Image 1 (tube, rainbow, N blue to C red):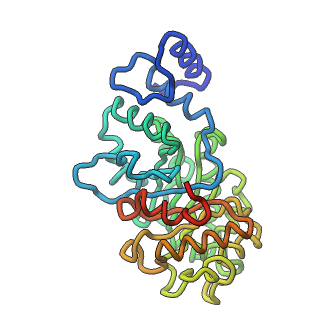
Image 2: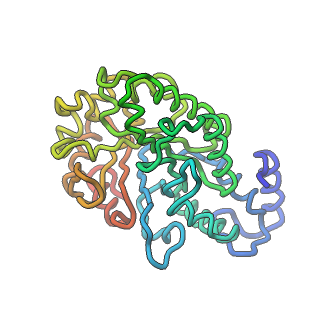
Image 3: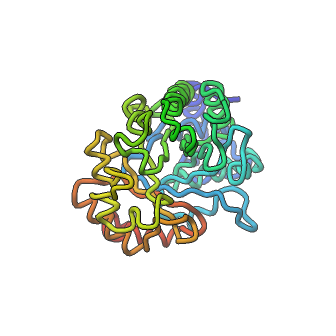
Length: 333
């Protein structure tokens, strides 16, 4: 059962009055303090969407001996952990592992992550799912995926839409699909209570490059419903976004005006543009930066008024030490 916010809050208050343990304590299996639904709903209602900077890590890779998210010590320094992926066909990889845990195990993990200040979300679609091209209905798909988020008690979703054929068609159908999908997600996952991010590739912000407008069109239509963008500054060419200038201020002619500050100059709030990078050269075709170079770029961006944060693909190649190095100059812990 999914409790309404009011019922959950009432249950939480009753539990607090009758128990000695506080909400910040890790949930022990069989705890009688609060029902799982009440505890998780109350936690979501308090600062449900973290403020910038956002430090986001995706997890899709199988890790031997580990079902679901890793111990929080391994992802210290991040504040969002994205289980990947929930597809139109159902949950796979780390998202599927989350369903394999018991209610009590999931509640325990959620409590530990919440205490560490880390939100747990699920990433949708990814590179293997093409929902527009395959004819998936955006409203029913949003309803199904939102119901999954609620059923398995997560803090929100990341829309990792990579239907390149639909965007490249230039007919506006991809952009319209994304707008309808996002609007319906927000009907089911209200703003301020659930996180809703998107993870577009950086070139999709290039103006006049795509017939349908790509993500500049998506932003102009539903950007107010999106908490931030985990922008993929990788997999777009061997020399794309590999220097601080190329990443921050002056992109190539191949993907014009798609560097960080150029995207902002074209109408996307700088506060919503999270810099996304691969953890290692092997985690992407190209676009890799060493942690020291990326840390320098992050520092330069912060000195120019940016503070949105950093995203990385993926755990375990990136973990606590990776983000500590990347944050060191601009956002030391």
